[in-house]
Image (cartoon, rainbow, N blue to C red; front, side, top):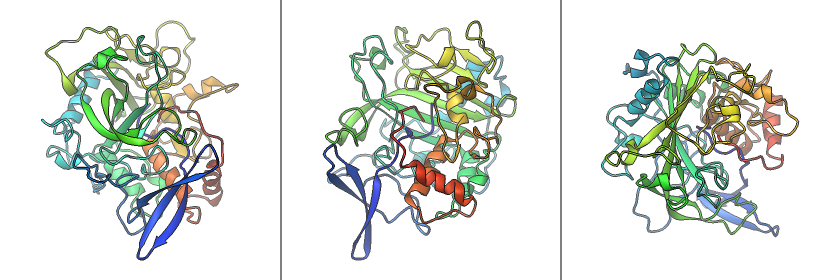
Length: 433
């Protein structure tokens, strides 16, 4: 579902010295075995410097918005309103989810669409980004920090959709989540995944945008649009070397929410998702436009591990007024961008080190992916749990693959070696973060 980049491996790196400056050249292998160097200034992401903002510098002549990683992580979370605490997530799921959305919107919606959701401009509360998403072909672009997500296949977004379209996203954590991110990454050159325990009241939120035009997805009419430095086509650019980046318009499609709430006894987390315009065939109120023209798809607090495949789900609520082209496996919750063979909670329960398999395939025992895994327990026995945070997982894996000579003191050498070896695996299927 949310809060991580598509699990695909970063391009290999070569370090090139130019006088006193060091430049990292991402080496992208073309279909003919040739290489294309894409230099990016690397005076960041070192043990003694701030984390990088994006994969690349702004293009020459760019005068628009520029993404700056919100990385002034607090040591303690200030007292803050938690309006969802007044609502019962089991009996009032729609109201619960809406209250969290309003909390996320406060101070983030601005008169300028391009300036909206810039944490530096929010005077109500702090929001923070997870570091180390600036690597590989899916890495953060420079305008809004968007990472490449799962590609939407034809008719996955709308019956009128005849082509595939790319999707991009950026994730945020409130102060409680920011405290944990700061603890994990306190030593920039030696992160500590043992500290990946999100406290009560953590909110993670993610904005997902699509390159799909309105004539392919009609309910996107009036959707907030951002400029972004994204790929001109779909598919893995390592396999399609002519798929290069340019400045394009992307449209808000989906908003994902996750809340650490101990009242959710099954997992300790509550997940929800919204769709812009209400989805296919939805009659929107013409007076409601822009960021607020979103509708809840549903809420889930567990994976319904004993579900017999028919009948009513007990740990998922789906909004009866929204009719999606697809949701998740056997009717569990997922957003329009997400893999229909999974669910929000299933995907995020796999957050761990070494990185596991996000979505079942082939002869896998599907039931393994639909267990209720309590916060603090790993998906695979013996691995380090990352408390449902795929943003932390992707960042830590990027760090370890980029520094094969650095073994963080918090991880056994055998586990680090496995993370290093993962980069030699075949390309993974594009199931969302």
